[in-house]
View (spheres, rainbow, N blue to C red):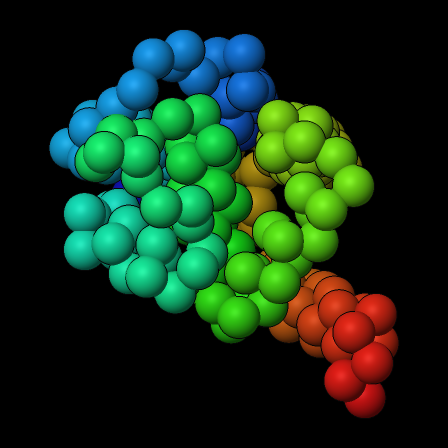
Length: 171
């Protein structure tokens, strides 16, 4: 295992990773700029880089707003970040419904800032709780640490999916 790379990745968890709305560009973007910006914001957070095909698919499926004259704005950046982070956990339909509901009673800006702040604070809390600063902090003989993290991920997904279904009377 590359312990140097793992330690470097852990160090990056020290600071919040997701930008707030005020950090987004205040001008319109073309597709290639949106792709590059999305990949830069999500560096080390997603496994598969964002592509223009993905964005076109998200727009077609109603997860993202349609661009205006092939130009994208801050709401598109926010939608792209949320979709990219959640798509490995939830169905695209669940994400679409959640985004729709999140902006039903507030602005896209407020909904995104809540998501980003919660994400960033959770990353910081997990790092502090686990007291991880390097690979050496993990008992190399105890593979169960990885198993515990995986099990937590599965349980949290099950609980959040069931809550979503309950809120939408799908049970």
